[in-house]
Length: 113
Ligand SMILES: [Zn+2]
Image (tube, rainbow, N blue to C red; front, side, top):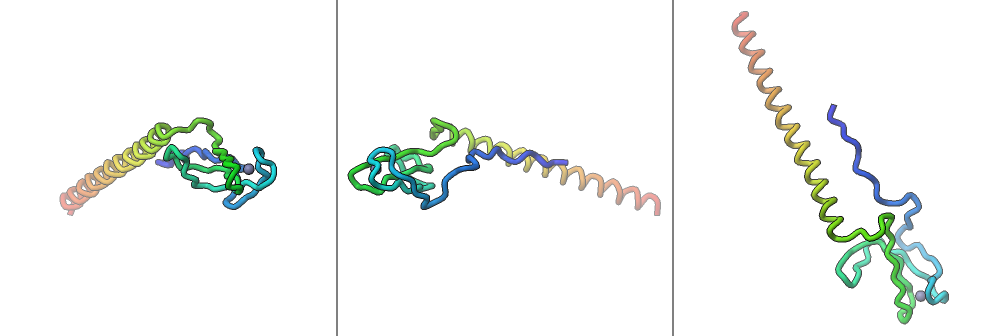
């Protein structure tokens, strides 16, 4: 009992690795390097392809869920916290039931001895 399904994997199976290179689709002269934690100008941090050429400026966000925003991340974070709180509550009630059972057993043993 108590084994919940693992959280859904958001990452694609074919997700690029740090340092992977591909030809830049914009300038077609230089490579794009994959960065798993690129900080975008709006402050969001996420996986992205970045052109190595200073003058090109190609940036492509890599998300299996298009348009994942900060609000989505906050919601996902709340979901994780809610799951953790439920586990804590279940654990506490299980501990309380176990203590009650131990106390009842000790009472019974004292009566019978
Ligand atoms: Zn480029």
